[in-house]
Amino acid sequence: MNDIIKRAIDQIRTSVPETEKLTDDFLHGIVAYKYFYNDGIFDKADFKNSYVDGANDGGIDLISVEENDLDKSLVLIQSKNVQDINSKDDIKDVFTKMSQTVSDFKNEKVGNYNDRLRRIYREKYDDASDDSNFGIKLALFLGFDKPQDYKDRIQNHLNKVESLQDFELLIFYQNEILQQIESYDEEQIFVDYGKVEIFKDHGAIENGDNGLLVNISAISLRKLYDKYKDDGLFEQNFRYFIRNKKIDDQINESLKKKRDKFWFLNNGIIIGCKEFDRDGDNIKLTDFSIVNGCQTTTIIGSYKGGNEDLDFPIPCKIVKPDREGEEYFNQFISEIAEASNSQKPISDRDLKSNLPEQRSLQRMLKQDEPKIYLEIKRGEGILKKRNLENWQKIKNDQLGQLILACCLQQPGTARSAKRKIFADKSTYNRVFKRTQDKSTIVDLLKLSALYDTFVSSSNFSETLSNVSKNGKFAILGVICFLIKNKRKLTNINLDSTTQDWVSDVTSDNIDRELLRPDRPDDFEKILNSVFNQVIRTLSTLYESRGDLETSVTNFFKTDKKYHSIILERIKTEFILDDYEYDKLSEKLNLIFK
Image (cartoon, rainbow, N blue to C red; front, side, top):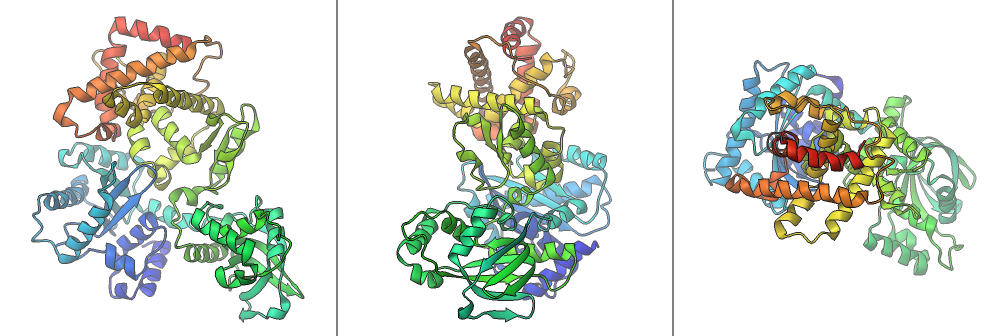
């Protein structure tokens, strides 16, 4: 077993007494749950409310609810801490057993399942199923690695299993588990050097040479904020200041009327650093960051009340690791940040926010005109910039959705599994480690904004409106599919099947400008006509499928359905029909390169 995973297992066994007698094989699944679905946290309560492994467990080890900006899902987890699996049918059997358990619960055939599974399944299901985009994910975590062609064969094999079509199937191999664990310990940016003033006469509490609890000056903290708020002061907090009106109002009220009671009303801050040194009324800090207290620091730093010059003490814990080494330091700070911020969920997007490709993309997009401001960390404030068109400001998860839906032709994943963009290594690499072309991104953002404007101003019927809203990524995907065909990047003919051309369609081969620089002045009217045509075609297709589709949401939920049903209809009606193709091409040629 890998040393990193072994350490994670031992940490769980030490911190949660209920797991002490469980074997490493059992705890392998708990590690997966902790780092993939529980923000790097696992305690007694998690064990009692997620762990179902044992006799009559329906092939399920743990159950989680995953929530993101788009949907809420029930996640059933199975772990196989083995060196290899004999055949692809063995993997299929893992998923079909879990799917049978779902079917049994749906049909109330649960008498043979253990009480723990029955209780936790029902609790988690009730929590997740009230979401309009509710889905069930089956996740398998494996203790070995395989090359990509092996993974692709497994996935293709699973795609053919009819009983699994309603589930999102996730397989995570050992290298992906390692990356997820290590992502919590990625090296971050710090403030090289700074100092805070303390109330020396208030005394201090020391924890050897590695911990210090003091009262620092609020004005001194504001000076740190002014100097370093954009230069590493909050990097270890995983996210910048995110407004919470209730909490913000309480802090502001304390600053305005209760400065003398602030010490009693606020938990204070934690500063993590490589080194600190007491020097009279000051604490000198080396390579430091505020790992908890971003909210407090930001509000104090930006306070504009009439009594802003009135100083007061703030409790501050200053900590440094008890031994040297960069890896140990990163792990130490990460653990402090995770523990002290446990009440605020840390998303996969947060954990990727400091990776080099994120910062590089952010810099590239804002260098030259037109400037694009990319938010890679929640709360950066980029989306509040003025004097910019809305399309010039975007979050990295939203950009990831557009790249995935349009360039990579996976609109189902983009819409229904946005978290996968950051949580799944393969998807993340395809989206963010590709060769990024700014002109392509600019036109994708413009195209998305033009679509939103068209939909918001259209007087559609209920079904058309539903299709236009829920099918945005599929519709933009269709537009880019038509652009790929126009550029002869696909090989489509009367005899070709979906399997023949889907690899071309999903290839990352669309680059440079999408929109013609010499497009006519009324191009938006022409583009709206294309939007309208695609929306109405997909609406008709949806209605024609009758009972095969339970909702518009489900119609746009998977990439497989997009490729095999939606693009097949687009191919038949718009590409292989010469008359319709000529009419559509006339429009496309006026707008797109």
